[in-house]
Length: 79
Image (cartoon, rainbow, N blue to C red):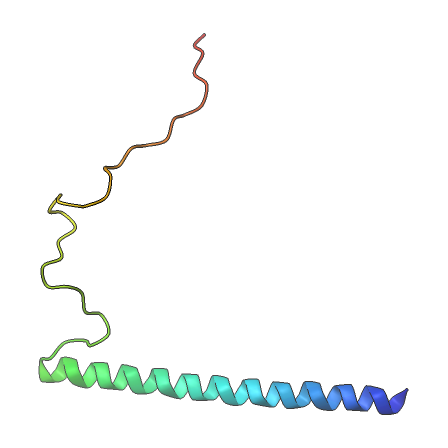
């Protein structure tokens, strides 16, 4: 019983170590992206990951989808 409990604990500890390492790598990557973005802003290039199409204008009104239509409010039988 003690042996199986120890084995299970070892697998949990190994997974926790892998997860911690993965999270540390992701944090380092995010930190690097923030530094790169800040350097680009300082150089006048702007941010790289927030690019949209240059001809995109949400207020232009020429959309290919259907127009907005609010949902019905249910039964309004009056009185």
